[in-house]
Length: 264
Image (cartoon, rainbow, N blue to C red; front, side, top):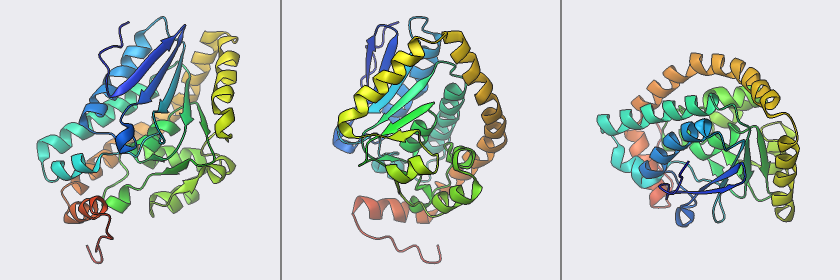
């Protein structure tokens, strides 16, 4: 299968392992509409590619992904067509990843925020360097956590911890993320590539259909929860994109000032 058409994602293939890297390092790999479209396309393509057994997801430069591009969010404010289209694509993306039987490894080399964090947490293994941070700060920009965090975080760390982070938008460092079970492990920057390669080798030397169908069995329960949450959280997120506090928060972040959201 030809992956040369992807430009916002840096796609490399070696034997039966594919590496998908966010490729907007100048924006800390923020996800704009172009990146979003490529993400929606690539996971079904990989799922159908018989030459691929393992996926590695990472980011070029000093970040995994900063999440939604602020300029895109500002421009979409109160645009019903643009916001509903983005939400619809997001639901397609979540379901495509939940249906992916091939194991996926996140190699996190910096901040993983918002949708970027969600995409990392969808992976079966998440290895992060000590300087990495994780957050789903939708509420910080006046949005509902509608891209998967509302069901992923409780499944991974329990409802009490999920509320702590999702309702405040707080960041969590890699060490704490590993300690509470949000990610697999934290490893030094020098050891990150070798750690991922070790897992890849282990998986390649394990019967692949046993691995795939075990993953599918694990994801079956997650899909039940996802299907109970995803429509409501996506609808609420779409509505919150029309709120004035969302616009105020986004513009303040772009101006690097503190938004005045009291009573909004």
